[in-house]
Length: 371
Image (cartoon, rainbow, N blue to C red; front, side, top):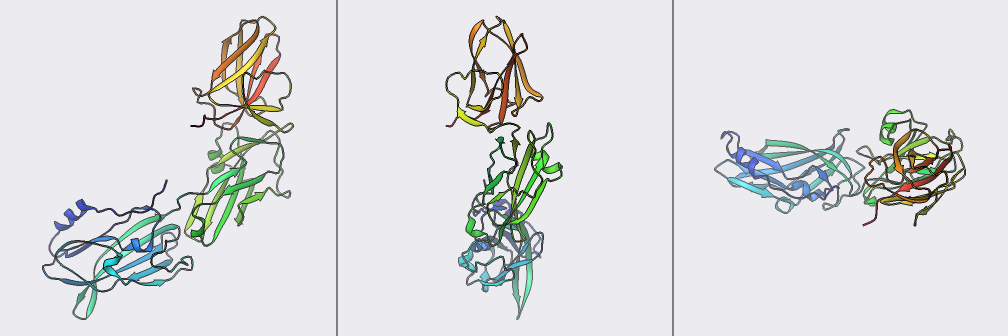
């Protein structure tokens, strides 16, 4: 989680500065952390060291430019002020009034106490000293900062691991916050097919996009009928990138979903021991720690092999084991929390094949217990 930029005094650095040769007379150290929200008045938090014996008349200038584009965002100049020998910590109150010159339309807030827009910036500090009637640069320091939101963009629908009955889903996402700090917020949506044994993240990075849309202004997009129809039984991954101007771009997580190859499913929270059944499953059950099921052993088998598959249909098993069973009714529990093969909110198929070759199954999703 990003945090509001805060002041920090770097005392060890100053000890090194004081040990420098006497001809290096003035030093400065900006006091900004590298990531977070940034107010314009925080640009003027710094520590200055004067090794001269006499008072020095100086002026501080700050320039801010986009790190990648190099575009000037603003220049700021302090009033003239004096430095005695030693170490001094400065803030905007010590240097005002500050004169700003703006060079970037993305920075629409010209309030001296306003927030900087999101993005990566190079901030350069130059301390000028007076020599007669001339101001000469005495020392310069440049740093890189990332001004980032308190909350990045987030995916909303389809949920991670959802099984969808239609082939034209509606995508929805949540914008970064605080929303009012963006001047030109738009979105890019990427959709890819997920191959076997691929994670959603790997699929987004490596696979060619089936659908790629730029410049979206809304926080939703119905999958267009003119696009390639999604296929039943296949898994897809999607991601959204939020952009604002030339300096800000933030990605969401990558989520996957499956297009069902049968009728739509209904999910219910499991209570008691749902019974395994033969044939097509129209329901899936939601379990927390324990997967619980009822199974009637009509063949008098002493053991049963149970298998777990990702998705609605049988594919490659992700987990198998043999269990002891009794003749007749069996109430069986499996601790899902101990199995690290299950991902929250993904659809799984669980089945038993009896000694006569009949398949008994159930669909389920795993959710972590709420605190």
